[in-house]
Image 1 (cartoon, rainbow, N blue to C red):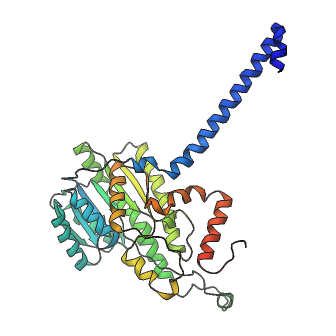
Image 2: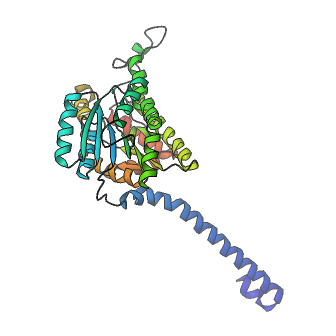
Length: 353
């Protein structure tokens, strides 16, 4: 209205233009801010890079090392890569299971399937395993994809069950399912070995990439416990959170040095694996948070597609919503609500306090 009234003079017309310009600028800034806020939220609900990742038609001739390949997701990854024609090297402790997986991988179409029994809890074991893999026929010192999928885990309260037990002695002690030897072993197997194998494999990955003219890949299996709080899993959650920090930092280093290797971290939800089924069948864990469990074969295909496409983070299965929870949890009200839901599932807390 002011602009309409002021059109009677040149000066007021200039004022009108200034007001309108500022108004348009304000609306533009608000629109840009809305886009910057809404776009990440929309992408968190529908991770387009993951959904639109191309199907892998063939990996014939590619050399793939899978750690933790004797069962569960690792076993299904062996079959998934085998169906694409890759050469697979399978690493685990249980050689009898590896023999079965190797035979099935060959039947599924693997270019070759060879197994290595290894202890991944020590630096000596890690170096020996990598050296043995690189000496294999068809590998010859090169590696196209490294899959880090091995893990050990326990589930239970980190402190004793109640106040009386916690205060029983002058110095504290762990809950009944824990011991510090296992805590240290968990850090070595679930974190340090991933860090070490990433370095040990790097020359072989780079050699393969430069000779073939194709990018090499590292795929590391993480967990929803590496993104959100999970009751009764403090050690596992701790090392998985650390895993994300390590790979996020290493990814920046690879980019800075222009090395032809991508890093994919897979955030995996509840999967129908031997370990999880055994855990939930125990009476003391019967009230844990349970989601509809995904089959390991589905998870394996998501990891293969995302890893070979070089996607930084792959959430699987999307139906469990971890990709949304990971975005919302840093917001204080959502963090509080998610924590309350977790405590309710344990049967120990009311929603409001």
